[in-house]
Image 1 (spheres, one colour):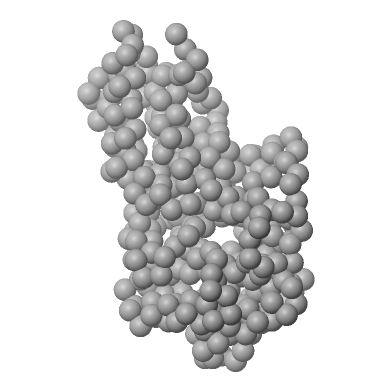
Image 2 (image 1 turned 120 degrees about the vertical axis):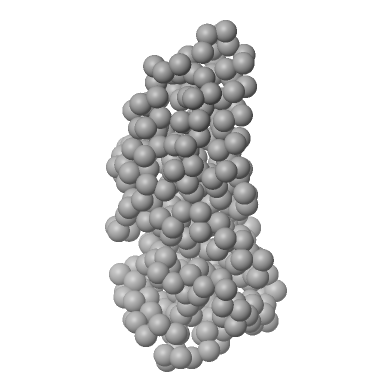
Length: 330
């Protein structure tokens, strides 16, 4: 059980874990091939500066980012300095442990224990990241945890957005609050929160129109949504969840910085990890921003939206190269 909930405290069964791991492993194939697979080709080579240069190139090519790459290389050098024999097989152990160190602070599952009800999640992001689809998958996920869910069609700019969200509402059997095309987004989401309160809904997920982080007028609209929601609940939205396209690599970092500066981002949801070799962007985001990574989107099905769990992500990324923890070695 990776999403902490007051309604369901069951842990994942062994079979469920195996299913999640298998799906994640298959979806991360391109990143695993680009990063871990190519690192595997270095095994057997002398561990010297040429080796380190090659390792650095591989990490940067997989969008691990400058800061995270420097941290990993420093850990490798420190490990090698503590061993008389430079063993390239140890590289996997050090890589795994340092990547775990980088990512672990960002594994902070949403916690609904003693949370306000309804818990309001405001989803934001640029155009084309898969935001509305991710909302549909989030609704499915939360319902599977025993929560009642409502959706708010706050993307009133894109003509098909409301219809798309209503389709997801029908799929998940959850109500959708919507108005006409071109309606004021803040008004729609305000009405949805009022309805969610009246119906004693646990979670309200609000869609918003995709926008570039450079569009100041549209960023101001998000601030308006937050101000309007505060009239009904001073703490709302309780989660500003930014949806990111993992395939854009380092550009994602600038997007998050700008959105965070304007409205404050509480969590991240990364989509399209199954179609990219740039999965290293998770390390960039973790080392540069330290904003919680809540969910990973690794495919088209409802089950392909998964809570971010560091051990699962790294095990799927490194398999079949299973490192032995360095801390247990002589």
